[in-house]
Image 1 (cartoon, rainbow, N blue to C red):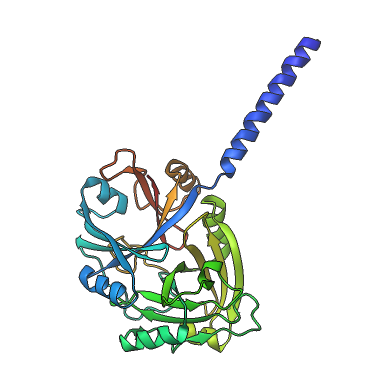
Image 2: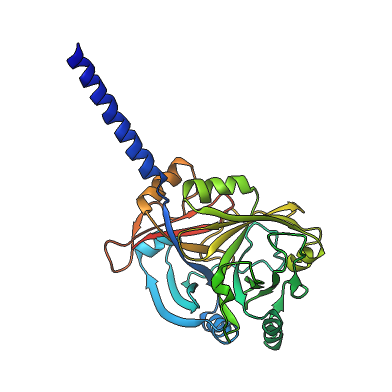
Length: 337
């Protein structure tokens, strides 16, 4: 009897160890880092000149890709893509032009509360100088002008920001953090005007649903939250009556991902269900990830796939990737080098 009990105890302990090991493995985040933010452009030479000459991004690579692997990775048959990577400070922006087949332009009536909205927040050392420089280069305004967020908002007070557009109509933001706000690296003394990318922001219909994707499935951590409203926020977003629930997410390294839920007005249009990677409103966040775990989790949670499954692509046979969409249609390219 004692021998039997010992066997049962050992079996129970073995099961407990296996369960603990499984839980520990499951708690490991699927996403290891946010590598870069990618946007689709219509004319690479024009966009390259804008980001290099106006915003001081430095080109670091220029390549062209095609073939069955990239077609399935991006979900675009016959794809031939020119990809240019640009660096600003520690962060990378990736421009992608579909030489074939070209996609559709950004809707001319796009608003900041539409579901396809996405921007990158570029940190500046001096908002006055940055705005004057952008005016000199005749950028298209999306805000009425730079806005200083009010001090009554403890998480956003003292931050100044301005929305504008690139040659394809993509929304961009310049952002200045006062002392005590933002990452400490943005407070370093420098003569440079444009410092780097703090985050990419996306409009979501339901923050809780988005958190189940970004936090609970992919493993990003919540780094902060705020509820912003008032005339300054309305003029920044150019949305009358704007009231936003803002949630900041981070991986272990790289730019953050900011969720923007419009509590009011809830009149923004959802992203078109037939969005393709070559459409100019289609961005994607490049993330370093455990791709097999990501595919399994995405299937279990029924998140939309752009790639039909894990794809081996490029010249390295060990390089795998997967492109999927969040509940609002925003894309992420998960790559395991």
